Length: 150
Image (cartoon, rainbow, N blue to C red):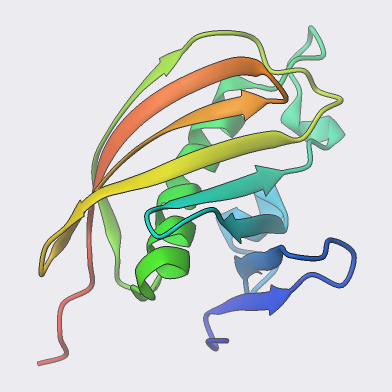
């Protein structure tokens, strides 16, 4: 665990890790809430968001901004889960996403992330946002890992 973020086994979800920023005022925790993370192989992990009322649009579907926020935060959770890349100091370089279907506001939203390649300074990722068998979105992204202190 870092002073910056919380990364602890979930007492309510065996096999999952709870992830959020240490301060309740930060975006991740204030908007998305505590996320669940689970490794699914050497280059794959799953990040789960349990929708809350403020995550929904007027039609009762998951708001697209929440889906994008989940994707972005999942990149860093994945890099930490898969390669122990520090969350603090990492940044999103680019992110392309495609909305494919509506998110059901009553079901967990899973971001399934694959780390395609890691270099000294970058991580190249892609993935899908799913709910059970339904496809909600797809994405590709590049993350820059933190530099060494000067």
